[in-house]
Image 1 (tube, helix red, strand yellow):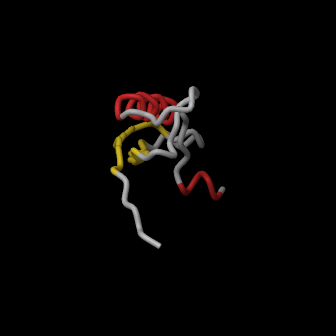
Image 2 (tube, one colour; image 1 turned 90 degrees about the horizontal axis):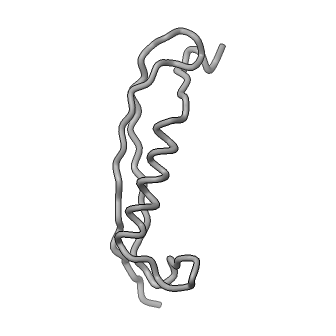
Length: 78
């Protein structure tokens, strides 16, 4: 059976936020959002997504992630 490699469309996002646990420590987080361009990754109409559609979805996911609060390890354990 052949192996197929599809092109990945990545988006890297960074955020610096204060700890939501109450200590006020500044936290720096980094995350990679990605999807692949492939015939199985379809939009609501059943057509394969374009790179622009994927980029728009990833931007929305990154925007939601950036607005979410973060808790440092010390506050999370306590």
